[in-house]
Amino acid sequence: MCGCHTYAPVVHTNMNANLPSIHEISGYLDNLLETASTPDYPGAVNGLQLENASPIRGITAAVDFSSRAIDAAIEAGANLLLVHHGMFWSGATPLKGASYDRLRKLLKHDIAVYSSHLPLDRHPTFGNNALLAKALGFEPTAGFAEYQGRSIGVRGSCDVETKEIVERAAQFSRSYDTVLRSTKLPQHRRTLHWAICTGAGASADTLRETRELGVDTLIVGEGPHWTAVEAEEQELAVIYAGHYATETLGVRAIAGHLGGKYGIPFSFARASTGL
Image (cartoon, rainbow, N blue to C red; front, side, top):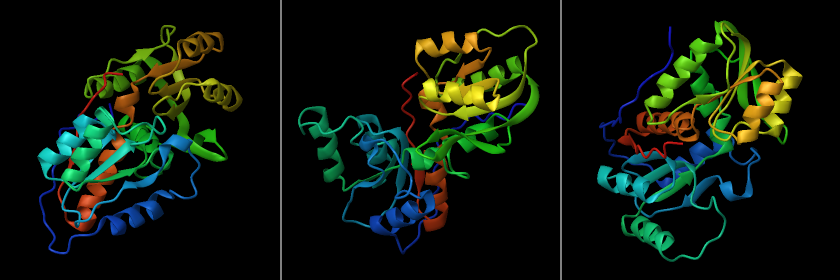
């Protein structure tokens, strides 16, 4: 049975008269996601990236901080934009052109921005990796993709024909307008030990880790061309399910959780890159 789900935008409409402040919500998220203690890339700047003045009356979640995401928040009447890839991903840039236009819209509509990268990737309940495993019908039993002493991904065991896993992942990817790719598979090949690392999950480190752990099937968002070549050499199946698609799950789950906790509307800004 395929564990994939095709999602439509969801909006929770129960309003609470006692609306939370952005500092209440960001403090809660920092604690829930272990933001301060989770190492990450410098450009991630996890946590509250832009505060606002008014109580939070609605949340819009998006994979990427972008004009499309901001416009979706404005259209939904939300004043908290929750993203996986945040405002400062490319480092410091002059506030002009598109950068200025994005900031101007945020300030004009009093929209706060909260971003969570690796803290969200690795969360056991709301994390992209745990949720993708569930969507594909897997039960994680251990961590994977070590980064500075923390497991970002997940892994486990099964006995499933690899082609079936590819079909499950392809159905999931299509629901986010992404075309799945995979390394060439021998006929009737079976998967016994799988691992998942969403986003840019195929790398020298993750391929080395698959060898050390005996993983035979690696499911990622994307990876460099050479990883497919190397995977064939080590008889490893790699399923490239799309960077965008594999990282939609965490922000959606967190937005829904916050919406239920605080009784405020939430929505998901669908802005697929196709990659």
